[in-house]
Length: 184
Length: 68
Image (cartoon, rainbow over all chains, first blue to last red; front, side, top):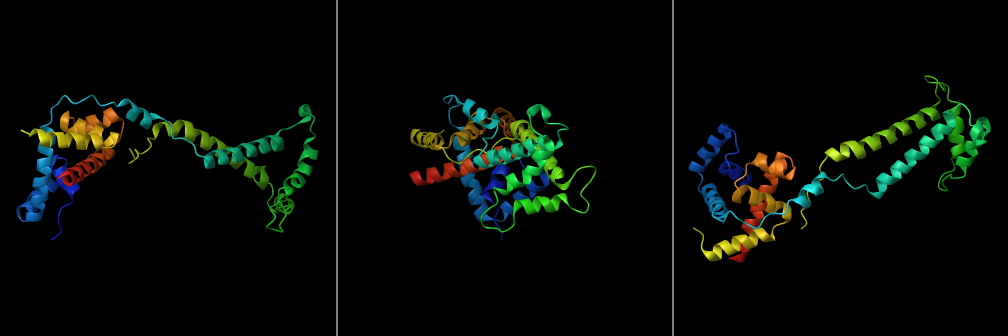
C-alpha cells in the first residue's frame, strides 16, 4: 500500500485540498494505520503550535519583505555580457552612422581598418583570422539582406540584446522575487 | 494546555528556524492567518507559502524529536 506523504497530510489538516481529494485521503486513512499514526503526530504538532500564547515577540518582517522586493544582484557574467553587447552597440554606431566627420574619423577608412584591428585579437589557438571571417561575411553571396550586411545584422542583434538585458534586469527583475535561501 | 517544558521546547524550536520559516509558522499557527494573508504579508507566491510551511513543520518535528 502506498502511504500518504506528510505534505498531503498537512494540507489535509489545513483543509487545503479539493473536496474529492480530501475524501480520498479520509478513505485511505480509515484503512491505513501507518498514515493515521503520521496524521496523529501532525495533529499533536498543530495542537501544540495552536496552544502557544498568541502574543509572541513581534516578527521583524521588514528584512524578509525587502529581500524579496530587491532586484536580483547581477553577477560578473551578466556584466560581461552587457559589456560585450555595449561594445557591439558602439560598432553599430560607427558602422551605420551616415558620417563620422564630426569626430575626425573617415568612416570608409575606419571600416577598412576594422578587420585589421579585430584581427589583432585573433586567438592563438586557431589559424583562422578574424580578418578572414569578416572578409567572408562581407562577400557573402546574399550580402544585402533588407539593406544590411551580415555583420550589420550581427550588430543590430547585439543592440537588441542590450535592450533585452536592460528590460530584463530593471523592469522584469523588479517583479521577479528571488527564492528565499535555506541558510539562516 | 501545554506544560511549561513542552512550550519552551516548541518555542526554542521555532526560534531555531530560519527567519522565513519562522515567519510562516508564526503567521499561520500563532496568528491564525490564512495562506493568502501570509502570501500578501510576505510578498511571496502561495506555492512558496505552502512549501515553506511544509519544510518549517518538518524542521520543527526533527528538532523536537532530537530534543526528546
